Length: 448
Image: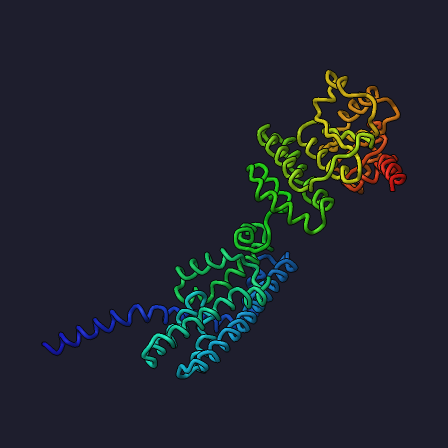
């Protein structure tokens, strides 16, 4: 009876000890068998997947499968290269430090690094513990720890970004979330397969419209264009981040490129929301004031133009968003030697326009973010001609109009403006053709 009880206790102890350890092994065995059968039946599984996705769209299905295969293959290849460049310095370093069996520990570090997060820690534990056994002091263990930390930092911050690049198409947060999710689902095997499986999900999100949210949440591609990001920062009254976005754009092409490719599109987004009644007056004011403050920060301080230089009135035609666009053009004209005064729409109303001086103006520029507001522009052009006289040219700027469309000719016939521009460079060119900038150059020539 005693023997049977001792045997039962031993079996209980063995099951308690080996039971938790056998669960990951069993899962790994199931995944291995499953993988082998998938590889043996890969042609049939591919055909079934195509049929499930829809045999009527073979082009998109094939493109998605090829994309997933290329990304996973590229990731695994780069993972092998990264692991070799990690294990080789570890082996050489342990050999130089005098740790026994450095080749074994280097190979183990290479293999275990296939396991994200936990692999490098497990690989480092064995030689560090061995260093405590072979050295009576702290010198060798500390040097081993420093070796693993230095190689790990170099691999994570230099080798991996250089070799991976866009191999996976996953964001850093997505890799961590994927590791937690697949580890919870499949244990250590899920941790090993987390990145390849998530890559396949991102590819599905890229090619299947119903699963597009997967690419948005997990992919590494920017989900918002720069103008949308700047628009949101201005709405949130976040001048620091707004300035960072604008400065990055300016560093690539200067103020003209930033204005044409970022600032004007940002104001156009706000104008579109205003037309759809999705932007309240407080939000519109936040965008307009933030844009003007942004322009003041972006432009370097320059001496004011002389009083005898040509004066250009840049008028925000309908609202403060148009005024912000007019301010952008004014900032571009001032370094060219022009006096550019930005006028809000209230000052050119029927009741207030008489307060403007009718003389001394070389040109008038009307700024519209809504290219279809031609009836309003026609009334405003007529009012300005009556006030300033027929000799003052009027330039109509329709910032949101496509430059290759027939908007300029149509707008001229509908509004009787002298010229029409659809971009910042186009506005400067039109002022040059109207001899406004030529007059500035002529005034500078005698002084030179």
